[in-house]
Image 1 (cartoon, rainbow, N blue to C red):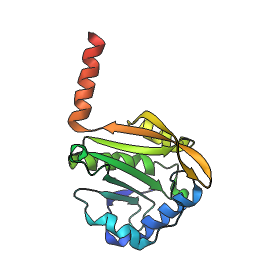
Image 2: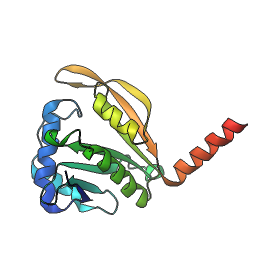
Image 3: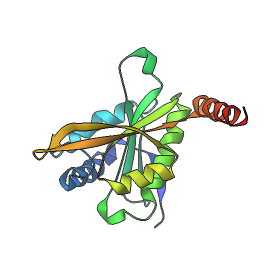
Length: 179
């Protein structure tokens, strides 16, 4: 599949909502249970310089999306974003998620983020494998974080350091190995 990754535009809101709704319906990637209307996606697209949304697809379509959103309103965390990636079920297994996750991390770093976080439903092995391949590490779990369809679910927290934070961590790791 020919795949182009670009910043989302207002015309993409319907496809983003449809892909998100497929993920909601599957009950494997989010605690959300209410389908989203395309109009609810539009505000996500209003501030690409701070909170980028990317789409991936052939020239005439969208088969996946990724976004970085604010992790916290506190100023100390202004460089920490929370990342989401969703791929149309028909396009999975073709590298779309890997390319989107790499691209959204690049976009986040270019905008001054030093870390991106993700929260994954614990049984979602496909997403856990994706983030591991993409340089994330699992840093913990929230047990019984919320109920989904009446059942308690655990959440795995993942993170990837970017830019100077990643370089400093690697340098410190090398120093500790040689000490």
